[in-house]
Length: 286
Length: 350
Image (tube, rainbow over all chains, first blue to last red; front, side, top):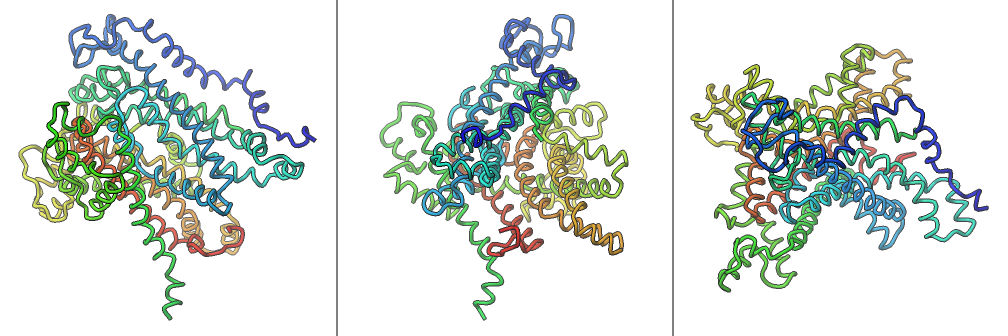
């Protein structure tokens, strides 16, 4: 009986596809590179990322591969050092958004059609998350950071909270679909408790899309964090962060000194594209 | 008679009546959010610890932080309803006056970008629908897939570098018009519209020279998001039985196209609502890059000064704008597709 009611999870099918696929290299290589740079950061940087090491506004040369910025900081070292900060924000945000989103999505999905207090609470939560999601992320992020302090932890948590509605919606849709499946009905008929239904059948069957989505969330969170940094309301200077570096370089760029803005832009673009590729090609089940 | 009118008109009256409820709930949420700020806001605003009891009390009252929580909430909601958002303790300026001055400028940029983005999207998608194998259609599909990959500010910096520094086509990113020009007399509050109305050609051409690049950046950055949705819903509508029936029964081509577009449009309208929120956020960033005075600049200043009153008002204002846009989106959708009205039971769509 137990074997009959155990839902066929999608995970094995996907796992089978991972190794040996030729399309794997272009998707995974940038990710590995980014994670390596984030992990080894300080070892790779030739100069201190937060100290003035040369004359300002020097073009790329053999000493300073990416040139120096308006303050005389080494752009290459800063781009490298910023990788860790930005990736940490993305990882924490994706984790947080997924964990909270799965919880909220399971709750709203299973309770929405019920009457009484749980039903109205669930409908209220769904509505509230929709309204929250409608607000520009950068605006909410800016206000929350200003209220709760500008450091790596708040930045990551705020970016994570901003993405909760997306994840909750994905899980909720999936729960509503799973509810109608036959295996759920047979589990219920075989005397599985409500909690068992939720944890053993709903949870494993409805969270997969949210896990896929997590790498998309990662990209968006990094973009939002960089946007806040760009506005000058993210991590306080001189903490290396791509968004803040792009903003610092923007004035120089309009005077023709393109390098101090271009390289953090490239780093940001590579990160976002690498992670959204992962979401698109790799974890796709259908 | 009245009952029948009520029954036929209920859908939009109900939806409009929900707006103040949403605003009210949001205001309460913001109220509690501000109460969660770690530390003593009075001391943060004052910037020092040595305040006399009298000074402390005065700031507390100005921030609406005196009395019981219930009393504070009532004071706060009273202020929101009467649009009295307070006077900034930092520069002594009326918060609502500042916002009334800056909000139209930001909304104007977001709206111009939105209209252009929608027009471009519609044109490209319709073209792609009619000529699916054309290179332009393939480009459109590729472009739509890239949604969100490149953030606005990266496009902005690249735009300034290419169009201002290298090519010299755009004016310097230093505001809305050349320094030294006088702003148009304030009639509508929307700077560009005012310039149009004043028929001051020098000012107008300077504004155009300054604004086309930020607007272009916003359009290029935001168009893929709606393009992706519209392409999918057009594909859906083209494969629909209703389309096949129309083609089979030999109606003229343009009738088929119009019917496809009508069935694809509700998704598009919904997406436009989200696009507005997206563009409002984008405009905040772009304003900063192009030194255009607007809401973004105000908020960034407020963050630097820990001006909680201004930030609270900023959040409330943006939320109000977004909620109004969502109201419009819902009403347009209910008009386009009566099945979306509340209380309408549809087969297979219960």
